[in-house]
Length: 274
Image (tube, rainbow, N blue to C red; front, side):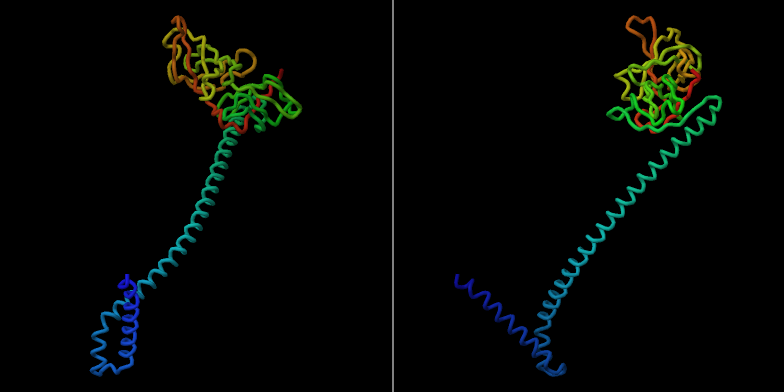
């Protein structure tokens, strides 16, 4: 214990002596023999302390650089977040422009039909649009059973009408039924909404004959014009699967709808003359 107590004192004395000798060496003329001897003896010690000083200085420089790096990192993160926000906004504007362009093309290609553009203002809870409300109504000439379309294809029909609003029932809703035709073969069928398929933008097409050539995977399905609700020739979707009923007497098909029912924002309502 006694030796441990004395060790710091001895080290302190040695350090003081070294610094005194260093001071003397600086005071002596460089070309004197005493100065040369002290310089030779103290040179390793001076080198040691010089290295320590540089190390300490470098350490504090490193700490300063780290603070600068952290500050720059925060600024870069803010810039990345701002750029990400701008990219999301630009993508949103791009999607909106594409939707509006497709609606304008639809209207220009269907000049014989009386259409009015509408914006969705409310919908069912969840992601998919089984029914939704638009911002036009009877004041704009909209009636119950008017067909509703988008630039991609058939959306549904008007179910209820107010003075400045209308509620739309979409073709993926379980209560929906559409007279259809297979575009290639012109065979008639019925496309119904199905609760188990609605969340994946699919419907069931039934009343298909068992003729293997009547429908194949990839066939386009359009409205038949029968029933008085939907005009003829509006794209409903594409056949993705063909199945037979349990008795094997008839076939039914799964239809991938042309419309993305998760992202409906604007639609066109075809005003009828009824």
